Image (cartoon, rainbow, N blue to C red; front, side):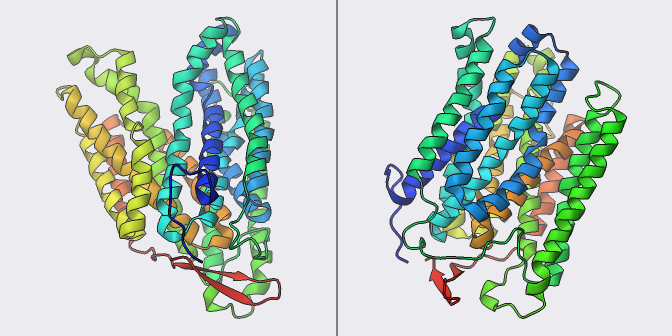
Length: 492
């Protein structure tokens, strides 16, 4: 398969797919975080408490964990075109529900359902992995994720102004409803302008399993083991939502949820065994072999990088305010602006991390970025009230650049583990990122900010050790033709 050049400003071929997909992810992030900059207005109008606000923020990420696993299987089975289009259209409904909510319960249910749109990330990872060769996958995935993630910043910048434009009383409702309309309209645009595969691969037919196929019994047990943290995180969320302070679930409902989570895990594990039992009973062609530890290590890597990012973002404004308010008269508004330096590099650093992975190797790049991230977190642990604002911003930027670059390197790796199941691989890795955010946020309640940064730095160092067990991905894919023959397609 010949490799066409990568023209970023083009709207044809694979570049068109990239632009159409990052825009879909951008809109997904706008909707996913459209409540955050408007919570003060929402709280004032509906009279909800600070504790109820915290519950709404928690519910916003709760459903994303299982959703990314589910959407990973869906996109592998039905393709990215229909998956992204339906996801955007369906998730516009709870967006409208949130805009029309009149009390805390309605807000909470709408926000919980809206967490599903966070799974859109997985769809784009699959389609970009299918359209771009391995030598360009890293930068393409980096642009997709980096530019798409900017949707949350766009929401924070634009939606408050829209709310005040429409009027103080119901302005937030109109602003949020507009994001739902944008998702509904773009779902049609995406469906009409995107194809699942390039012409060179359009004729290939591969068997779609209902769950991920592994190539050894050892990998089967490792896969089942890797699901435990995801389901455990859901139980942790259930426990949090049923705590005596502002409980949203009664003890009876909490017990039912714990039992349901356990039952779903057992069913999931049973399906894995059923899907793979017959395959593993006979020799599997070596061309189809892959090591599931690749997926597990990448998942842990994303837990540490993306998970720590979300946790740090939640505590950084208050940390800067408490640190510099008395010594340098830093206001809460200025603290928020200072904390924004932690994510402002995302648009550039994540694509750069993917590009460097393409050029110098994914394993080496991820190891170097993880080392830099560890150093960045250790430096942040040293911040004191005597530091200058300039030095603090510099250290925050250094940490952020390495973190975003590491995320780019991770998803330069993901589509090349095994292309036929890229959706499910991305789903598991992405779900671990959300689980990491919840785990680190809970650990934060037991640690000082300095201790928290030391913990994150230590986790990043452990990641460097794990990276050595990754295998540099192969530069070809194997597909099964309709007549049963195996075709090897070079990607370089």
